[in-house]
Image (cartoon, rainbow, N blue to C red):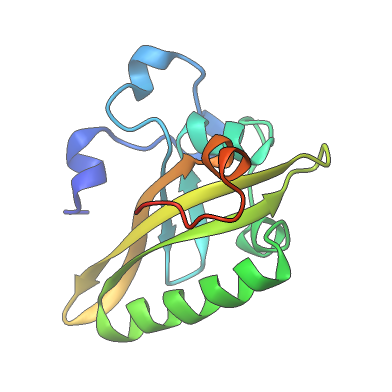
Amino acid sequence: MSHWIERAAPLPAASEATSDPAALAPIPAAWECDLSDDSLRWTAGVFELFGLPPDQPVRRDDVVAMYSEASRAELDRLRSEAIATCGSFTFEAEIRRPDGETRWLRITADVEARDGRAAVLYGLKQDITHLKRAAPNSPSPL
């Protein structure tokens, strides 16, 4: 793959995720989704954000179910548009982890295109829960 995540640091497969901070230092919460089968690859930082064990595979449907209804709808809209246009997006999403904790994430995504078609969606996830709690009625700066 030619996108910047792979050049910066290879993403371990879900079964190979590591908790070694040095191995993940360049991009601690990087992710990618192969659009041919919706398979996910995450760094350990994304597993931590979602409260999931890094030694278990993740399915996109299970992860999307963790998003609030409003965030899930926005994700579906933005993702579909990015795939159709080979574009990108940034948005803030509310998730509920398996332990019941609610978190807010800023998600950035871009598309790797092959032969003019979207092949991989990839990007970063950042925990912004502290910003939302500090100013719950204010829009967070992007």
